[in-house]
Length: 402
Ligand SMILES: C[S@@+](CC[C@H](N)C(=O)[O-])C[C@H]1O[C@@H](n2cnc3c(N)ncnc32)[C@H](O)[C@@H]1O
Image (cartoon, rainbow, N blue to C red):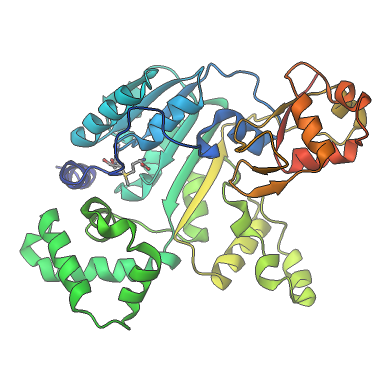
């Protein structure tokens, strides 16, 4: 067996023992949304406009028990979805999950990321969450996926960060040492891990981190095993992350948690430092050398980074420019499908942040019927174009160019 086959077999065994994630199965669509799995919201985030087509093909690479896959189906009613995974047990749960909630535009395949070329055609949207860092060769994995991404398509990736997972790594190594010959017996690993936590003093650093950050989810053995007893994990920092991204041959579009990557949240009180940092590059978008240095500075100063989540694109990806008033007035606005609590002056935006709307902003949003232009709606309202630009910046609306 090659190294990658040995790793894949060990990873499949882990997830056959503990299919992940262990979320319960429902007889209805899952509650709420994650905008990263909504093609309209994700595309708008990446390009500043509504995508031209919605009957897209989506790949959920390393779909596990199908929690994300199920959302991908329900949140994208015109899309067809394919889920692949190494673990047969996880796939069984994924199929049942989707069947029970009526997510029927989906097919599943027992297939490694490395062999994704066996699937016919290309995909417009590839979701790969929590998977690449479990491959023996993540670069080979991301390159295989990149070949399946259609031009103008988007890939959403989530991989672990080393700085915020330091205590986890220590615990993983400690469990492995104590397991000795029993390494690879994942139930034994969970038992050993739980015994260690029970024995360590309360003020121990690893215990404190577990309590503060992870213990709620780790009540379930599936989560505990995924975190502490994994046979294969590569954690990234900004430098190694961009080595992976560069090797993919795709373009970095931006982090999908841009709020974290704002330096002013850390150094905003020190204008002199902000000025020095400005020379490094402007965050949160962009992937040039200067931006990478900014990102690195942020993670060095806030080493909470447990993961990186970001979008890549296969060029060309058209980006909208709404600076000209004429273009804006002629565009057709729609409400972002990821808004909760509408119609109300107080809504949750795509990222579940509360937004308070003025009465006129609310009226504008109510008049977005998918046919009227911005100019047409504004003609009957005491609202200026700048206010519409604010709605656009907040991603409460998506625009289609005329
Ligand atoms: C942590 S789970 C993530 C599941 C899902 N993406 C989610 O976020 O809910 C990792 C999944 O990746 C799968 N996996 C790991 N290596 C893989 C590979 N080479 N090819 C396909 N799937 C793989 C595992 O079997 C497991 O189900």
